[in-house]
Image 1 (tube, rainbow, N blue to C red):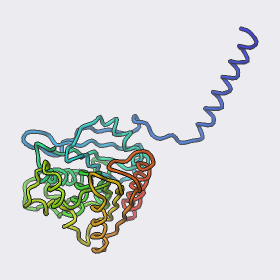
Image 2 (image 1 turned 135 degrees about the vertical axis):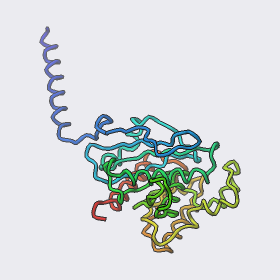
Image 3 (image 1 turned 90 degrees about the vertical axis):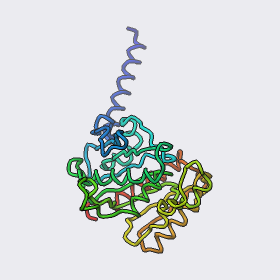
Image 4 (image 1 turned 30 degrees about the vertical axis):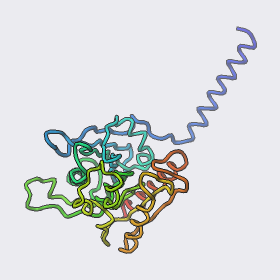
Length: 287
């Protein structure tokens, strides 16, 4: 080996050693292997088909859970739970257990048939909270677009359960402690006119509009909407915020300037940070 080659190898070794030393001073985010994944938990059946959610539990859980409504256009797509670990890293890194909830999808099922699915999912999680390592009173819900609509339906039309039913899941209340909704449609009386393919019966439009069910006992609610959204106009979040404020509900509205429907880059980071902060405050153990 030449003198020059020895010098080069020594320099490389020193560089590696310095890099390892520097990196050891920083806490790296947990990897997928450090998140306990329970896939395809069955929370109910529909026409012989299973309704499922995935559970993502971080290495150091804080005892609170966040239900993520997987819904775009009220279509609930499946993805690998390992991929979900990356998508929900911000919550997992703060110790939140994430429940990735799927529902019966359009066009097979209309929205009036979808809302009961996610309500059942929440009841099921509350009923089995101890098994999932979460506190039943520290559950939040979060979604975007149709998922935001479903999140707000969970917050505004909840009940204490039906004590007369033989189904133990339906005896449980479906109340949540905090809500975050990205660009949610809140008044389906207008949406069904613009999007007739949603097949919303006029008689159901009011029942399915969270705006019309706001009451003073609704949980703390964060709304995030882009002012350039051409799919769900920002007016939906504006009027929802006004209704929440009128009813004395702790609430906040963040308008992202120049953002459309679906966030990327800095908009996604701002929305994610606000979402995690909201849940950190309102799902804290002291609440």
